[in-house]
Image (cartoon, rainbow, N blue to C red; front, side):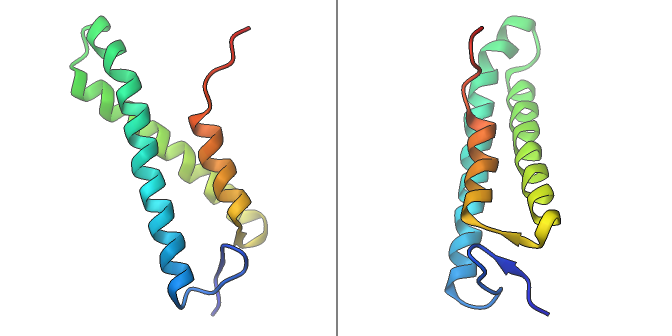
Length: 97
């Protein structure tokens, strides 16, 4: 059984490990960026800061995993563009109207 990830590479070899490590590090960065953004809001609203940070980080990571799952379900392949889109969409700054 062959599962294709990142430019059609199989699960075997260094490419899979590089992609896996890349995704895991980007998930940690997404969690951190979202958690730090929620620290101020948690302090203002009276929610313990650690709870606000954990909730924001978990929600952010869940959104990324959902986007990756949806992309993978479409065609069974996760390409670099799919990975970039999932992470970039989550970390975009909100646009002012």
